[in-house]
Amino acid sequence: NGDEDTRVSKEGAGSVGNETTLFGGLTRKAIEKFQIKHGIAKPGVDGFGNVGPKTRAKLNEVLASWTAKSTPATPATPATP
Image (cartoon, one colour):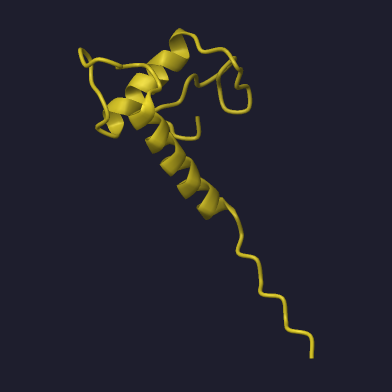
């Protein structure tokens, strides 16, 4: 939901900060956009709009990238003399 290209909704339920656990039509459309954007699947391909192994792997890769960018580096703890 952090990517404008694949956001579930711009306002209301499903928008940033108002995410739900429902996998409905808006979520399916967001998954389809994600799959197209990342070259995973397109309309007419088996699995389009569903979160299968390829989509899950890409979601995890994107999430790891975002987490790495948003996590400040931890300063090294000085050694005790």
